[in-house]
Amino acid sequence: MKPKKQWITHEELKADLMKDAKFRRAYEALEPEFQVASQMIEARIRKKMSQQELARRARTGQAVISRLEGMNARPSISLLARVAQALETKFQITIG
Image 1 (cartoon, one colour):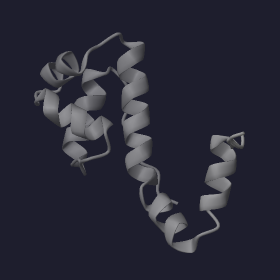
Image 2: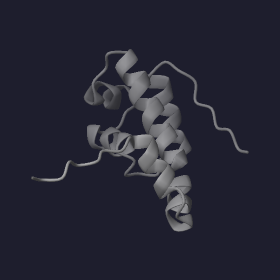
Image 3: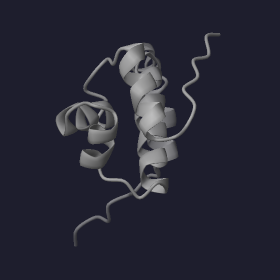
Image 4: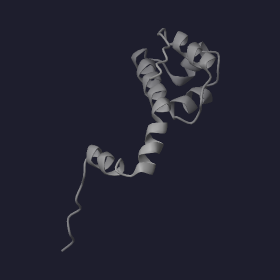
């Protein structure tokens, strides 16, 4: 008889991984990119807009939007401002 797999929740896995200082530093370093990506995706979906449409309105390429949403880019402030304008929303940076 095979032993049953024991499943853990996402929260349990995260809590376990966060005990590792190196992992925690890497996770925290990605927080700004995660915030940009998740808020962009949410705003774009609320507007029922495709990546291609957002790119056209922001005067950039669809691949650029894809990289931003996939956290594979470090965008300039001017690009983020154009994306925010294309999404008809505000762009706000908080330090602290």
